[in-house]
Length: 141
Picture 1 (spheres, rainbow, N blue to C red):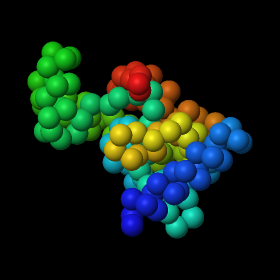
Picture 2: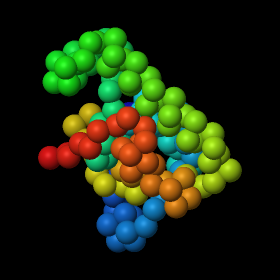
Picture 3: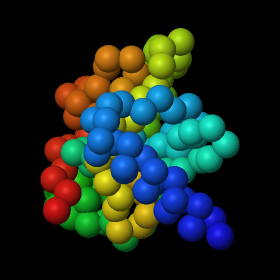
Picture 4: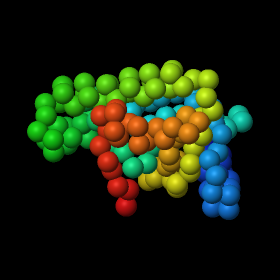
């Protein structure tokens, strides 16, 4: 049932985004890591994967070991960088907490997360994280 509700919400957002090409106001509920957040629209909460960026992982998972190998880093360095990106996003949000949060919806990924660009008023959070928050550019196929 939860997956059906999430799918319905994402479908509504998709249709709205296609026809309106506007940013959708949301409430930021939780920062999961440097490139994934939970947002709420009315009573519905869902995850958003920030599109166009990829931050290091924050735990010793399979993907973190790949990031370590691909970037010639230790697993501890990967995790430390992932935590730094998360803290950077948390501090960016705290500094802009009085501003409206928006999502520019771009689709849904393999895991059922919304893909999008997050804005704090006019600040493009995805671009800021790539420039200042230790996240890399990532092209979704």
